[in-house]
Structure formats: structure tokens, C-alpha cells
Image (cartoon, rainbow, N blue to C red; front, top):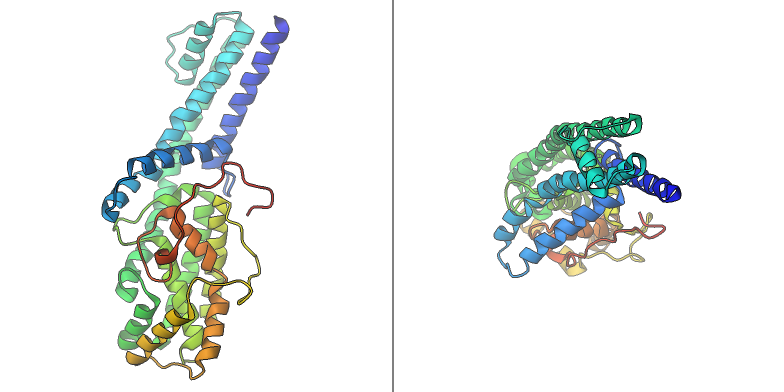
Amino acid sequence: MIALRILAFLLGLALTASTLYSAIATFVVPRNATGTLTRAVFLFVRKLFLLGLRDVQDYKRSDRVMAFYAPVSLVALVPVWAAFIVAGYTLMFWAVGGISWFRAFRDAGSSLLTLGFEPLNGLFETALGFSAATIGLMIAALLISYLPSIYGAFSRREAAVTLLEVRAGSPPSAVEMLQRFNRIHGLGRLSDQWQAWEAWFADIHESHTSLAALVFYRSPEPDHSWVTAAGAVLDTASLTLAAVDIPNDAQAALCIRAGYLALRDIAGLFNFEHNPNPHYPDDPISVTRAEFDGALEQLSAAGVPLKADHEQAWLDFAGWRVNYDQALLALCSVTMAPVAPWSSDRAPAYRAPRLFPSRGSS
């Protein structure tokens, strides 16, 4: 019997510790350290949402429903963590108190939720009660402090996405962005955009890998998406470097590099596997040569100066695009992004990521 109680105590301690690790990894650790329990909750809630939308064809209705997905998943984490911690403390109270399972459950729940309706007797039971109450308060405090951080990062992200509509249309398009700058601002002003979006990519790189729930927070407008905005900016920079006949701007290349590094690492949260050094044509891209030539025809008709060698322009564009093509499409898929040219319009159907990443996954 003593051996059984020791085993129960160790099992309860392990269950409580692993749950606490999940909470700390989700809310505190400033990097992608999301535990299996947090991932399981997000996947389970996602399946429930998709089940409810299985017969819905209207995108705006789906968008309204999916806007609740990330907040509901975050809120669901708290009772799930509480349930696992109560289960762990039930085992520990039963092990040290020599009491019934029901009494152990009441002691665990009363202590974790600081209800205080069940008196504790003995040094070990009292110590367990204090530790459970501390953990309960810690989880509540972590969630409260987490929300301002996530909404601050969300606001910074969406401000740039909203401003992009003025410059690139809705849905955002690289061709539209170049046409508008050529017509209104002058192509020489594009360098300011590359600097601003390089900083934006650095911001989402840090925030979306450490606060992973941000990936699923949808824009206030149903036709806006941080993913399609990122794709439009990267395609604009790639087209500019490859095909537009203006002085070469190194800032555009820096913007592209910041962008593809951010998208790859964010997509890596969902076990996205990729070649870290892709090269065209060994690694294909989803944009076809016909689509590229069509874009050049539109730009030429709008008076945008283009380089004469379209063959070299295509090779240069593909050489830039290959760096972010697969990560962009993967994120369009997992976020169910609205239709936009050269991104979500060719993204594969959503597939739930694996709960346990395979060895070697990003």
C-alpha cells in the first residue's frame, strides 16, 4: 500500500509539473516552446470549429466564426490546465493524507481555486494546499498579463496591414502596388516601404513565434490578412528587383530576406519542412511563367518602366520568390486566409499539423 501511495504521489507530481511547464512555455518563455498539451488544445478546438463550418460555403460567415478560434482556444487552456492540475493534486492528497478519493478531489479543487471550504490537516496536506493555491493564482496572473502583450502585437501588425490597402488594394496585389506607386508617389518612394516592412517582418518574427496564438488572430476586416499582406509586399519587392527598370535598391533585398526568414520560422510552428537554401529551378515556385508575363503586360500598360530582358527578369523573380513561396502558401492554408493573388488563391487545403513533430522538423 505504501508503494502504491508513493507511486500515486510521483505520478501526481509529474502531471502537475508537466501542466505547469505547458503554462510557462505558452505564457512566459520568449520563444517557441509550446508544450504538447497547449498544442493539443488548439488542435482539438480547431477541429470543433471546422466541424461546425463543414457545410458553410460563404467565406465572410466562416471568417466571422473563425475570428473566435484563437480567443476561445486561449480561454480553453485555463480550465484544461486546471483539470490536469486538480487531477495531479488529487493523487498527491490521496497519497499523503490517507483519505478517500472524493476527499482528495475536494482538497485539490478547494486549494487550487482558493475556495477554502475544505479544512486541511497535517503538515504535508497544508503544504500541498498552499502550493496548489499558488499555482492557481500564477496561472490566472499569467493569462491576465499575457493578453495585453498579444493585443499590443496584434495592433501593430494590423496597422500596417490596413495601411497596405491604400497602396496595394484589397485584396493586396504586387501589380496594383507598383501601378499605384508609379502613378501617385513615384517608384523612388518604394525604398521607404521596404524599410517599414523590414521592421514589420522583424516584429512579427519575434511576436508570432513567441506568442503563437497571434498567428490565428484574424484581421478586423474579412478581406484583410497579415499573411496575404506579407505575400503582396514580398512579391512587390521581388518584381521590383527583377523586372522594374529603376536603380537597384538593396533595401528591397533586405526586406525580402527579413520576410522569408519570418515566414519560414512562423510556419515552422506547424511542422513546416523546407529546404533552408532553395534554388530555382531545382525548387519550383507556385507562380507560373504565364502569370509573370501577364503581370509584366499589366505593368507595361500602366506605364511602369520595365527591363528589356524578360527572360532574365523571370529567372531573377523566381530566384527571389523561391525563398518564401512554400512558407507563404503553408501559412495561407493554416490561417484560412482570404483569397488574394499569388498567395491564398493557390494554397493547398488545410491539413491539421502533427501533434508530435517528426525528428528533423523545423
